[in-house]
Amino acid sequence: MQRRHALKTLALAAAGLGLGATPRRKKEAPVSVQTATGPISPEDLGVVLSHEHVMVDFIGADRVSRDRYDPDEVFRTALPHLKQIRDLGCRTLVECTPMFLGRDPALLRRLSEASGLHLLTNTGMYKAPYLPAYALEQSAEELAAAWTAEATKGIEGTGIRPGLIKIAVNPEAELVPIQKKIVRAAALTHLQTGLSIAAHTGPGLEVLDLLKAEGVAPGAFIWVHAQSNSDQSKCLEAARRGAWLSYDGFPATRGTEPPKIEVQLRTALDTGLGDRLLISHDAGWYHVGEPGGGTYRPYDAIFTHFLPTLKKDHPGIEKTLLVDNPRRALTPGVKGN
Ligand SMILES: [Zn+2]
Image (cartoon, rainbow, N blue to C red; front, side):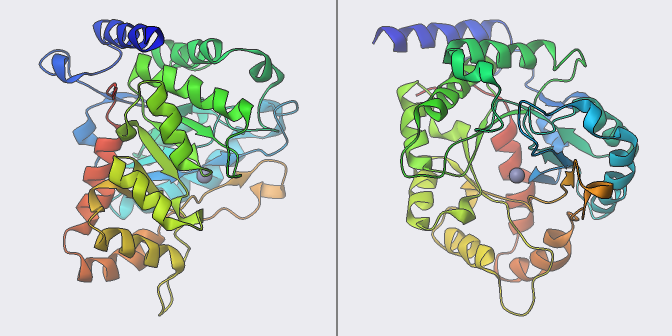
């Protein structure tokens, strides 16, 4: 009870600082979404791809470094792909590469200015071996304080603030202690900033329970890679509780038969959960360490291959999945329970 009370006090204090949005303060300062080029109105997010990447570096937290890549080369590689989806009507791309895995907010700002796309970056941490040694030693409160500082003061001196919290959990049935701590740190950061929590795959229902224990409502949680879960009934259960399901692995082409992810999405739609779903490609991926960054995957297939057929069966689906849902999922607000 004491902790619950303390968190409620924390949330109210955060609201008073203008860091979050509770229903009580709706008439006060307008809520904005933080992008690489600054805050914008949630209405200006437009068409959103909610889970993509520009760059990733899988070398590990102990060796990751800005010296390992040429930002100009990454810029030249990514820009045509961002311009391509801008021409297809996309207005916002959420870049989900966490710190210690190739996050570079200044590069995103350059790409945003050159492409005309809003780009969102994130705070939070992934899982081993992409966790720094200090993440093992520090408490959830200490990690949350650092992530909250990024949300209020900007990341690494750039002044760029994260648009969401991105974490990962282990894929096994039960959360391991270090990932429980990461989830708790994300919950504390949410309560202080109002940023939503996107968690890479794993036992989503357990994450929801953990968030609930910390006083965070399901609406603050985005279940990343929902398509990877072999038991889709668990994902649908999470959505029924109010979580977001991110079907974010749409392939480059569709073919005549719908791929598994489209079948899963259609099942969720037919279950009446259309207002809890997000779609994306999890594409891009300039791989640091590979010549030329390897093969950069484009972000266009949803627009060119999937929406045309989905729209036939679900009129208006484009606005629901790419405009209304991501706007609701990304608009900051302390979602306590
Ligand atoms: Zn991803």
